[in-house]
Image (cartoon, rainbow, N blue to C red):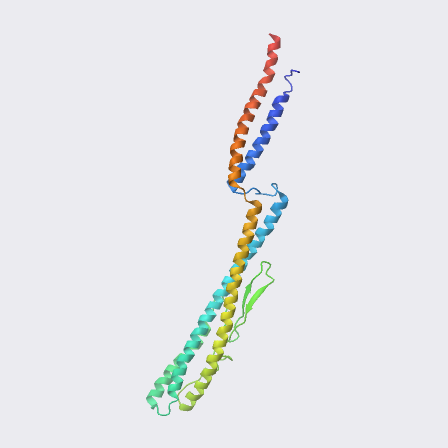
Length: 275
């Protein structure tokens, strides 16, 4: 065995092992602190790249959810307006049928006409105010409701606008319609019946669109959850396993420090040769 005070091979080996243990300990502590076994590209570049791509997909799906939510809210406003118009038409029919009675006196007809006109004008008020986020899907020349449904924004769901205004094709009453005479009342009844049918058809289309958006949102939510689980499978740390590793490495580090201390004392044995 050669003795040297210039080179301590034992200490160098002990230091190398201690550095290796410390590096492993730092990795385990990082995994415990972050909950990730792969927190950066240096841990595993291939898996990290896959995880980042999946995270981008999840971010895109979050934007899809927001788009669907906005479209759903816009559609809810349109449905509420359509239902209100339908209710108003039913009330207007009652007034028009009553006004078509040939035995009605002038005072009663005037009262019915006043109520009819108020209900008629309320349709315009409702339709003009049925707007959400700058979109009105029930006015004359209204906007279609468009929702993004894919994380690359290339696929959409479009629910067509339904014109429920007095100047449109669904509500066949004119803005000047009255029931001031028996003849006008009879004509109004016919127009109202057609309008009720048309509005119900429009409501059916809007309702079907709402259901489609609801189904798509449910699917996007499930898809996002599945991808999140996939990311976790790739990068999440097994904390039970890491905890066990931490205990082992801490003991190993202490032993390494003792081994290094013993190795550092080895050159001092050379002094015994000169006594």
